[in-house]
Image 1 (spheres, rainbow, N blue to C red):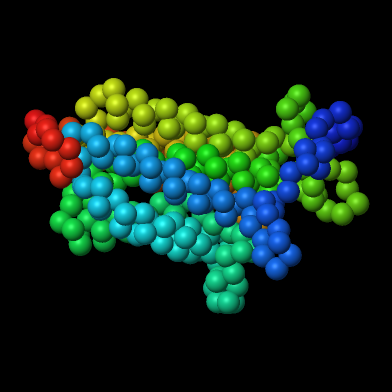
Image 2 (image 1 turned 90 degrees about the vertical axis):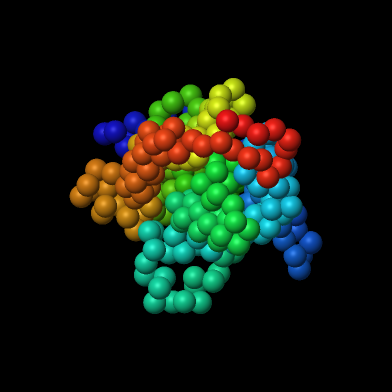
Length: 294
């Protein structure tokens, strides 16, 4: 009965194909550029620009020259960690087909894996230059929402990672969400929910704590705010998002999506870092900038 009502309601909703969106941003025949690739590039470049703005403030944990190396390290961490995370968390059967793991153009990236990869990259950079890795991570955390925002918009343009069926004015009828021959129901545009929460809202929260408080002088606090904020936002949106087909069994057995399970340690880690950040505060001698901060 419910499926019949949703199918009937879908006729009055926006159809994805009517939006005129195309995953390919530029096609020259022999060469194509997809919006998803541009989303990664935009997130990294704008995040780099914003990081330099943060480093201009007193008590910065590294110099501008370190930011150049950091972008390289972080990019590797995002790509390698994101891909390996996807394979381990969402498609472990790919381990039996190593060549498939290397086909990044076929899609399949995990944000949680990217976080782990980026963290390892920051630790390696910090050890190489003698920096406080946790304070460097605080600054990087403030830049991550840019990538999240553009990434989720690219997911929407690709018509992927759609939400559960819904009869709401803003619900959208995506393509290929059900078996051939079945009527496509209108669904939550969960990609846009995530873009708004993980991108815009999380950026505003981190902006406030960086520029309007002394959080950046408490190692780990901004990282903790990011982990807690992202974890809560993603955990919430997953209730409106359709689970990956190969992981429906997990939802049926536990009631939670894989994304929600992966967010639980992020939330716990964020609470811990925030709660213990004051005891890590120390006199900060700037590597960039001009003022010493008590």
